[in-house]
Length: 389
Ligand code: CAA
Image (cartoon, rainbow, N blue to C red):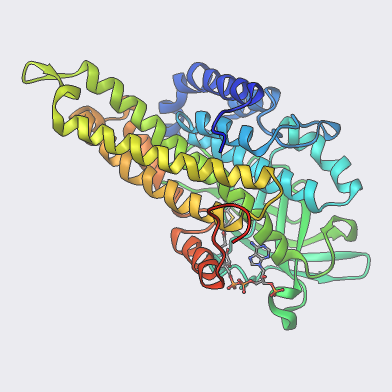
C-alpha cells in the first residue's frame, strides 16, 4: 500500500487550498445569505483549470487524475460548497459523461467550452416523480426522424439558471422501460428551454438550483449520447463517478468543520484553560479526526480504483454513504464545540452543518447508496483486499 501523493497531486491540493482560503472565504457568508451565485468565483475556477480538471488537454482540460480532482474538491468544500457542487457536476457528470461516451464531434464541440468554464453544464435526471426511482422518467424525447422532440420538467437542477449545456435524460420508448431511455446534450439557448425560479435552500444556498421546463425542444439526432436506449446506463455509470465527487465534498465539509473547531478550541478559554485542554472537547476532536481519516481512506480509494481502471461503483457508493454521515455528524459537533458562537453565521460552522445535509441526498440518497452496496454484497462483490476475491 502506498499512501503518498505525487508532487502534481500535492500541488493541486495546495493551489485549491490557497484559492479557497484567499478567494472564496472572504465573501462566502454574504453570498450564502443573499443566495447569490458565485459567478466571479466560478469564472476564476475555470481559469485555474478546476472546472475541467480530468478532461484531456486536447479538449481544453487540465488532464489530471481523479485523485487530483478529489483533493481539489476537498479543499474547496472546506470553504464554499456552492462553488464545489458547481465544480463537481461540471467535472464528473457533464464533462466526464461527454468525454467517456460522446462522439468525437460532441467532444470537440462541447468540452473546450465546458472545461474552461466559458460554459457551465447541468445534469438533468431528477423529476417531480423520478428521484430515487430514476427509471420513472416522464420527460419524453419522441423520435421525429432527423431530430427528437423533447417535452417535460426536471427538478432541483444544479447550475440550472447559469448553465449553457444540459445533459437531459428522457424516455423515448416507454414499452422498453429503462432500456427505452436516452441521454441528450441540450443547449439552453434553444427554443423551448425555460428556467423556473431559483430554489430557496437549507444549505449550498448560493448554488444555482432550478426547475427546468422543456417544451417541444428540437434536439438534433447527433446530440444523443450513445446508442438508442443507452440513457439509463449512461446516467448510472456517470453517477458512479459523480458520487466520488460528492463524497469528496462531504469529506471537505467535515475537514473544514474540524479545522475550525480545532483552532477555536485552542483559543477559547473556560475554567482557566483553553477548552481543548478539557477532556470533553479533546475527545470530541479525537473522534472527529478518526472518523475523517476513515472517510478519507474510502474516498481516496474510490478515486484510486477509478484511476487504475477497476470497478469503482460500489466503492464510490460506500465512500459517499460514509463520508456524508461523517460530515453531518461532525459539523454538528463542530457547532457544539463553538457553543453560542457556533450558532451565529459569522463563525462558518453553522453553514457547513447546513451544507452537510445535501451530501446525504443528492447524486443518490444514503438509502440509494445502500441499495447499490447491498446488491453488491449479496452478489459477493467485496473489495478488500483488491485483486482476486
Ligand atoms: N453501471 C452500469 N449499469 C448500471 C449501473 C451502474 N452503476 N447501475 C445499474 N445499471 C444498469 C443495470 O445493470 C440494469 O441494466 P439491464 O437492464 O441491462 O439489466 C439497469 O441499469 C437497471 O438497473 P437496476 O435494475 O439496478 O435499476 P433500479 O431501478 O433497481 O435502480 C438505483 C437502481 C440504484 C436505485 C437507481 O435508480 C439510482 O441510482 N437512483 C438514484 C438516482 C440518483 O442518483 N439521482 C441523482 C440525481 S443527479 C444529481 O443529484 C446531480 C446534481 O445536480 C447534484
